[in-house]
Figure 1 (tube, rainbow, N blue to C red):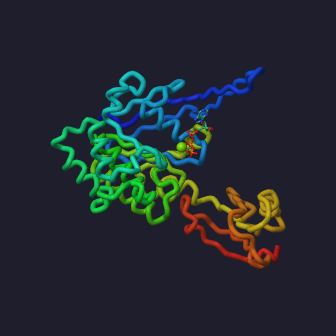
Figure 2: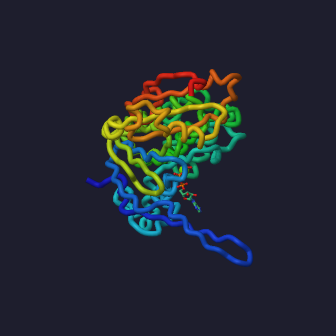
Figure 3: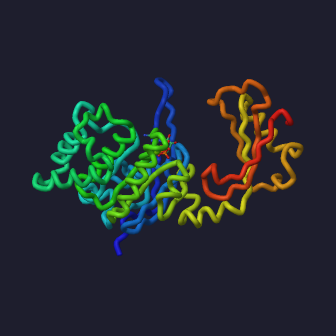
Length: 319
Ligand SMILES: Nc1ncnc2c1ncn2[C@@H]1O[C@H](COP(=O)(O)OP(=O)(O)OP(=O)(O)O)[C@@H](O)[C@H]1O
Ligand SMILES: [Mg+2]
């Protein structure tokens, strides 16, 4: 069986230079030996924080960046030597607003891109109709894109990326900046792609999104894959550990960390916690009184979802 995607020890180093008179060279190792395989029809998630190397990995797979070393094949074609064949068989969507014509309707955008992608004129109408149905824009296709919400634009992007009926589809953080309702609709669209038999590589930093959608997930951090498996397998890895969560308002991260680590604060069982995370919600409005501050701790029972953490709250005035 030919794998849909095969990455073998992929590496990519970026070199940048700064300074006018004393030029200094800086190397950034964005991807440090990433290997994974995706079977045809699989929805595979690349999950990682900002700067982990997700976009760089995708760009190498879709032939936009040449790997510094390592190899990758898409549907059996080498991404460096068979560029034309790889590009013919793939589609991709990057998160963000660019790539659509605002003053044209959704339908005209799809007609225009059909011409560019060489979709035969006889097939265009049927294909566009099917895609509008798939992404849930049927009935809104006559409106100008400038009047679309961000979620609608992103779904139009997905329709655009599927016009030439690619076998493998790359989605780089498609739900970024979209509200929960729009993101839910988008997830339904992505789930629909798998039902159509497409192979999908999705990057995200939302754990619940990867958990809900993906057949398998690779967790990438600082350019390296640190865990790989089905969502259930990955959840099994973390469920044994306890996570102490502390949320505060109006005080710095260092103070929170010091408090949380101190034996005086931590209940006896949480001192053996496998990991401890603290953050302060600077973006939130400062509390009117200290009693509105609270701390919480719990046992994390699944990957990522805050709702999966059982919490007990106490006012911070008791600190
Ligand atoms: N063109 C470039 N020149 C120099 N460094 C780069 C370049 N592109 C990416 N990097 C660096 O490579 C690392 C990985 O970046 P990348 O965009 O792949 O991360 P990411 O996982 O997609 O992050 P995000 O979730 O923020 O999109 C980062 O440290 C980034 O600064
Ligand atoms: Mg990225």
